Length: 152
Image 1: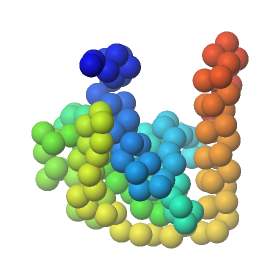
Image 2: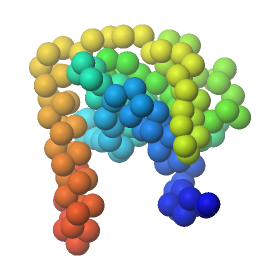
Image 3: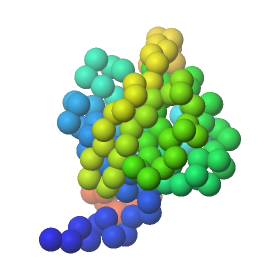
Image 4: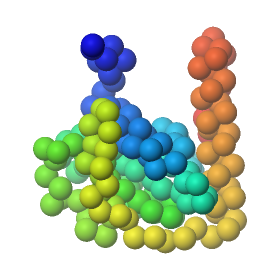
């Protein structure tokens, strides 16, 4: 049976979908395209069962990775940072001091855990609040597509 929704997604969005499915199996909830601060937009942010916050950047090609000059700015907004790529991606390009997931549109596998750098309590509170507002806004738009909200 074809997955009609998957046909309309871009490569990075397909990776994000598989990542979010895998995270759900680990009891994490996730949102896509969250803006932690002006000038940054993470592909996937996940909130774990113990309050841990992970950021996952989905890269669909070498050019996509090489054009990303902002990724280090995401480190201060999470406890762990990961790249998500497909199995054909040249993973030797990715920094060894970051986490790594191999993903497709349907699932993912953690090959390397990102090192843990615990957020300060005030930063954690701020990002969890942004996460909750972002998720609630997304749900509102899904329920009422004619109503436009901003996700900041």
